[in-house]
Image 1 (spheres, rainbow, N blue to C red):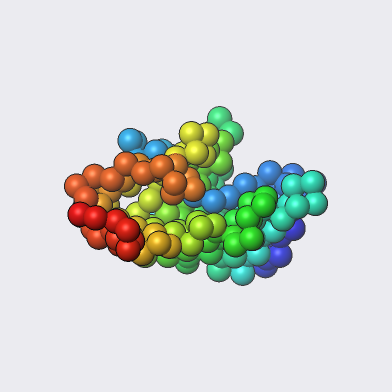
Image 2: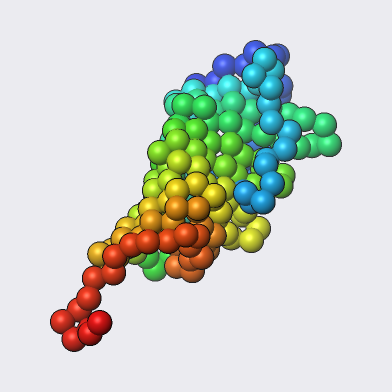
Length: 199
């Protein structure tokens, strides 16, 4: 993993070894369970322990590129019992790379939040997710549970499939993180018919 950023610390900077461990452990991309709100939210008046500006994080596994993340600002908060929170108050853009997939996936949002120790993530504000097949999800809020590899939302969600299918879930959805297995709530949409299809 490679991180390029300008660091501003309201508190005294700790040893380089701590930062090195932090860079190696940081793991991003956004999900959480909308069955419950993310806990330990930072108070608006609380000062972050670390602030990184113009952050660019590259994550590799066994030399293979897995993720490319860019964010104007990353704020890190540390709580008791080792629970850490990261906020992305000025937006985020993540590119995901999958083995044997030519086209990478994308996630964009105006704001994001991560509870790394619990594997829970949240993104909101013109959220756009594009998978490797070119399918696009648009909503105003999305949650990701990294352990279950599922995403959730109760917000109005639009799905645009690469084959021309357009679906609107008025009360949100539950889905696998690759958008292949969907449960849509209060749905309407259009499905293109092929020449040999009949009504």
